[in-house]
Image 1 (tube, chains in turn brown, green):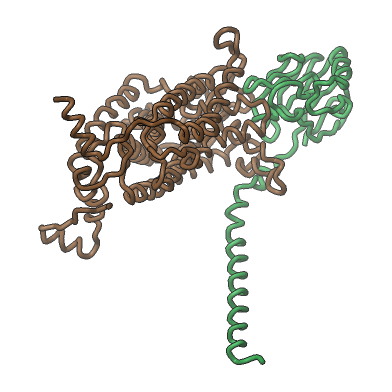
Image 2: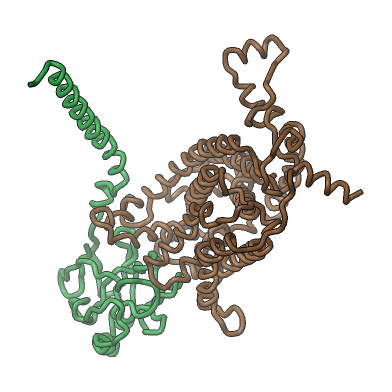
Length: 421
Length: 173
């Protein structure tokens, strides 16, 4: 299904190369006119391409920043200021990279939720989904290590808190006791820690590229799903990726870049934290440690549980549970367009996730409303988060009465066109 | 009866297992330096002790020192604080029960790690519900003996090795 139309070059030079290394044919059948895609994809299907675009932006700007940044505890903070003040266009490149991380996560979060809503994780796309979860985990590790590099107060204390999460596993024989010192290369977050985080922050994006290639490869086996969630049955259900979706993606990309540019040019520090403009100090913990916004819901889950080990386990489980989704959801229909009850709980899950994010950035003892503090709310929200996967999804997906599904993509599209007149 | 073929097969199996075993050991031996290089290096391990002059710390105050790049707390406790710490030995909300006497060499000098046992923040002095330390990160309350009384931290603030060189000098580490 991956390549219905064959690449047949007429130019003799292209043909000469193609006979020896069929690389243009590969591109043609992967993201060109040779790759046929359901004709009814909406704009939610743009976000995979947008995430891929952000990955490239981060790698290009990151390589440039590495030419000026110094991974040393006495020089790192100042070298970032040097980039922002002295290096030609350093202010621009640094702002793109720092905000780019957030844009990458925005694109990926929407991409993941698109998968939730339209059942993209369901058979036969389980491995495609696993690779996506792995991409997300690598992104989180990379983003965390990148945030440590400027060596501000939030960098330092964020690094300390997150690496200390692993001290919860000190009950494991032999490796348990030394695991945090092994991560640090010392007895505290210090020069060896900064140095290795820099090394890994440079490495992991290339690992990410590798997994993204596998993700796209796995996508091309069954092909994209679509808003109706039914399989494409024949040529009348599909159109070539190029020019139809290259044009649609290019339009979406233009809008996304405008959104991105608004942050870069008008509020480059909006998504950052003022404490990170204070150089790291091992003696003073900031009054209130918060991670970057894209980790906040998970941080809220960590804090919601009063036991250290269980808190850490809950936080890791909250992401690892995504691996089980293809089996937790037992519905025969993919798209939530035809599963009204699932749709209702999906939106509740989204609101709950945003609420957890809000709770993650205020102190646990702050009163939110009606005399109830953030901790109590976070405990209820955490309960709902897990209940969504463990109770609601398995039951609702198997029991709910679904709406009638169209016979084919073409039939549904033509029907919709007729209604429009 | 053992045939020529049996001998060949047995020999082949032996060689197969032997080479695979040697290969696995070699891979392990090659990987170990790559793993172990991340452990604390010798210069980091060498910086293991500091000496502190206690004359500079008045009664009722705490001072924070850096030891192995981690904060340590030295508190010159008042008689009232010592009495409170000892009275709390029998409190029923001790999460990690330990008597005050086991945590100090001289009751007026409380010397311990300043790293919260939850996730490593530095607790704040003379705050929290027990008049000891309070960690602002995730809300752990420590008493005037550095024992965890409330919050997510699992253990008391650890007491590291130290010796009094004389009445007013202590060597930590």
